[in-house]
Image 1 (cartoon, helix red, strand yellow):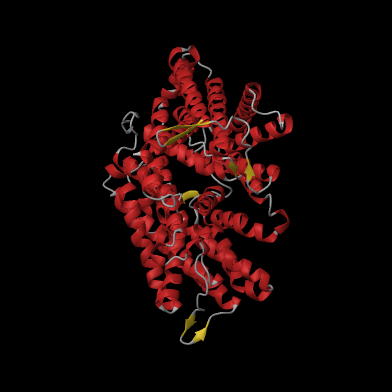
Image 2 (spheres, one colour):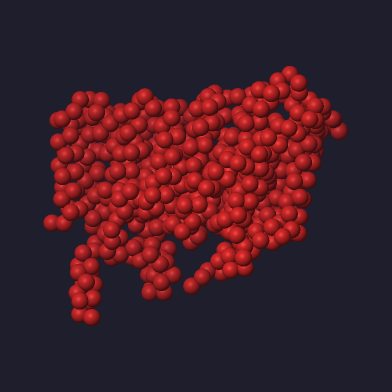
Length: 300
Length: 321
């Protein structure tokens, strides 16, 4: 049973990371009907940005709450800005173009970000410092729980609840939901669709930045091409939950994290990705709209 | 003769004499170009002509290459004898994989095919049944022989690849003028209308997948002959992304478009080794820029692939009005 509870905790941790990243995919898809392939690379980028801020400005002076908060805030700000620039340059000119053009543009943007990371930070693996968050661990029964895991679970939960209220209870949230349902009708109601899309990219990128930093803190090894791996997993999480649905992305993330952890714990780590993609394909065949997605009637 | 025919003839003549004009380094670049353009053309049948969002095309290329390598190294087949298998296996796999997901809407299909490609890569890397050789792949593949004559020189391999390209172009030309080609065109234009006209959409989509897979498999054989080795990286999903991008950046369902796309993505990098480090950065930027300036690709097909006689008929009908 110890393995089970250990993998449960690991799975929930990974799952919250996926969920944070998946929210970026699902919000963009909900409004623009576009798979933002560059989002995963933005997440990788944020891990590198956080690493650089830490080593350039804090160095030895780690472990204080102030340091951690500063790093998270600045990384989120920088990545949100890059996200907005990405949308302006790569997606905005293609809103009326054929759908595949936007997909190719997203793939191009992904290559640009990924290789910028490689040119800036080098092709070799970078190690995220371990002294950013205290290394405290607890042992409950035979199960090990680290302080990092607790922080990840707690902060992701807070962010997701905050996002839920932002989308469902505020005026901007209502405008975002309206735009997701029908852009033209939203325009007629006086909603500035350009601004909504900008807000979505700010929020999605900032959440992705938090996810990226956590990935850095949790896994520690950073490679320039890791964006696709986490991005695809997060995207699968979004599909499992129902793409376009925000609670769906959260649920999908947690479920995928648990699934991954259980496969790694009980079957094999080498084949873990294979099982993830088999799960994806089964879900696409059985219920392409995901768990919480609505069934959309095909327009004739 | 229209413009396209003239350009095609000049291109084919040039490629036919190419080995006599260049040194061996250029010759191997030429082989790479021919092989990858064949794969790109086969992707264009699926993506450009049938409009199926397939982002796992490297699978079929890889199955072709691995079939030849495995049959040759582990089972002692001659390279020539492996060709039928390297064409049929990708077709079988294509039908088995695409069958259950062919009805999915565009983006979902795209993600499912990426998924297949990643599974394929893991299967190769994990050395399944001790056949695929793990992350390093398979080395020491025999040279191809026809009637005891060894086809090991670069020129011989070049002409094998050239023959494959000509065959592919011939198949595509016939496809465009056939019932199948027209069905694919209508499905691409408006799937629901095509369905209500009595076109069996799933059947024709699977046909496109099978044909594309067969040609990609054949290209895989030539790839194996050229390098006498195969490894998983050559068929990972980034390669599929490249083929996907080639067709759409060059211009879907357009022969010159696919040629330009292949040239830019696979030949330019070989020519400019100085910018090796930053080459994908430049490609990425070029992909974004091309899509913004020309959303339909650099050299899009002007009138889809409706056969000439139908175009003339439509024009004459317009005249009568």
